[in-house]
Amino acid sequence: MLYENRKGGKMNYQQPWHELTIDISNAVRRDFDFDNFFNSSKYANGPAGVWNFRDYEIDKLFNAEWINAMHLQKIMIQTAMVFYRKPYYIHPEAHIDNRHNGTTCISAINWTFDPDDDSEMVWYNVPESVPQCNVTPADTKYQSWPMEDIKSHQFASTTIGTTPTLVRTGIPHNVETRSRSRWCVSVRYADQHFVDWEGTVDFFKPWINNVNS
Image (cartoon, rainbow, N blue to C red):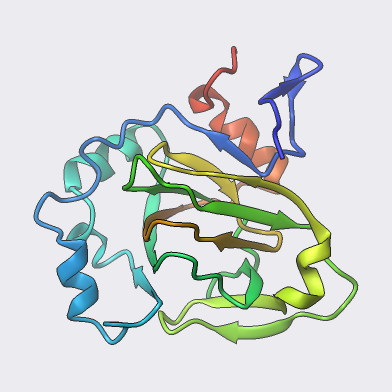
């Protein structure tokens, strides 16, 4: 489903993603080997993996210079998730991201490392059924619905690719991996001052691609 960043001269807050102009060329450490990271993990030879880099270890993934550059722009990076999925793997649940205190994580900045990425991030309207509350193997909380209960509620999808993209994580979403394996970084930042998705989009407006001030 296709959207435009601007609608009627205003931001389109219904769109659950926005491409950003943030420079990520020096974000990930050059000595971080994703394949070795996966093969030496508990997920080795499996269809998927998820890892959580907390604030005290995020410099194992990101360059300190890049983190500092983001902080100077008032994007206060705190943690990051790393996801791996093999081709054609689709997780059997859609989910909403929660913080450790149980509140909803409104958004994240995601990108993959494959310029030919053909997977799709998919968003769903919240169904009437009650979600399950779970904890990922990376010790992060989430609410989930089985795909068979939520698939008909799909309202948007996009391919993230290598462009840093603001994504809405406070509503049900999933990733449909296509013909290529998928490594994705998901940056989490201080967002307690963002009341909702609309406030988040307003904050990131200076970096949203194809949007004039």
